[in-house]
Image (cartoon, rainbow, N blue to C red; front, side, top):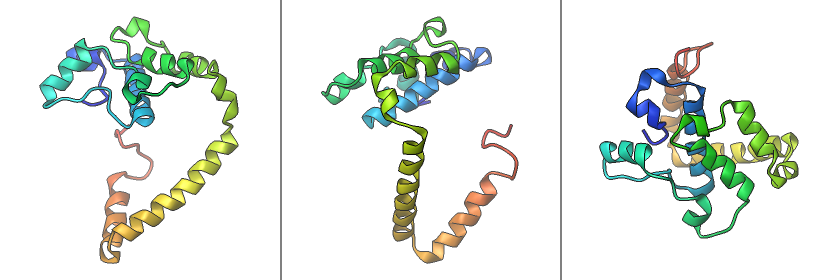
Length: 154
């Protein structure tokens, strides 16, 4: 429920790609701020917030300025009305390309960042997990996603 669109809560049979863009916006919000869009004491309160409340802007939440282009693109994904959100992933990509910072980060930069951090994450995971549990963990993870299938079973 942390990343569910209002329509996924109110009428789940009507979700479409715009609902996915809401979820993507919620993930982006978490990545930028370190906080979920809404915090609540229970699931009912959380669902009401997704339906009724306007998210606090990331810059306000963090108390720092950030790219208005990026913040506006992110918040557009979190609009309550599907009609006000980007209608397709391509529309969102166009909004993001409009960010002045977009030209400062290339695919090669991204690949290098992930290679660096993947090694770091793998090293930290191995340090935290006793060797006796590592093998069992890897077997469990391998069994969780059957070959050729996504985690959503499609």
